[in-house]
Length: 233
Image (cartoon, rainbow, N blue to C red; front, side, top):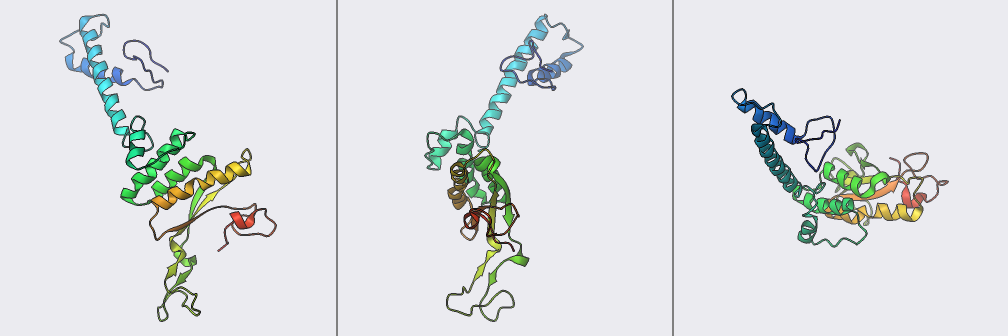
């Protein structure tokens, strides 16, 4: 339950665990007892310990807040600075979540587009529209290689590629919530396209799609099937 009193100064965070100030006070008490009376909350010793604990807890919290300024998912005061560093100009209506996602996409370039970075980006930008990331296994990928190679399809016509593989293609699978109209849905899912273009390596292709009522595949009776659905492998 929430704590009140000297070990729970503002701003307060409620929960079952003791406050950081209370933990520090207890630690300081254990170092002075039994030589000093540390149990009397009205005594000079306890008051001094409480004051010291508040200072230490405040410094700890400030250090934690500073560390968060390098984490795109948590940054606050430095968000505008990071946007300036990456050359981002967010529209006036963008939420903090969307702005942080864009900064995260740029920051992820240092470590390339890992699955975790892509997943986090899609989740933050798409919200309830996002379903999953679908990858293409080698066993079902379309592969083209020059004649004489022991794997893949070989070019027959001049338009056929010499080198090609769809194993590096990913699908961002989405859904349209019942409370979302077509315009909002398409605008929401389109928001991830330029960001994926930044975070993904040049050799990775991607699509943003959704499945119809019968799952993966393009079906003639489904509305908007050409614009939305993926081929069934």
